[in-house]
Image (tube, rainbow, N blue to C red; front, side):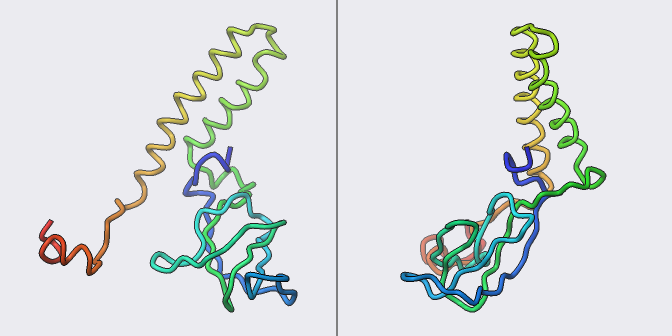
Length: 150
């Protein structure tokens, strides 16, 4: 469930140091993923994304450090958003509906409830972040006559 969406309550930022062992080819460094890593959201900074590959619990890249935003295994339910808690409840109900009731229609109904809730939960969780903008890029300025002209 945590991997299904970048829930704000399950996102971390770290700067990784390279391992002592280096990749055999293509990259100058490898970086071990944090032990609580579930899914990568982004590698690098907002305006600088390095060339990288995920391989065997490591990130292959070139450089002396690596910025990483990722979904972490947040086991502290008290820090979860209320909509994530409800989503987890519905996920468990969906998974247990058929084994407990023997009713395929009950299992389908719980799955549909989960899907509807997830749409709303993702939208609400995403609204906590500011809107993304195109930024202040020279190409935009030349195309639209300066920043703010569009």
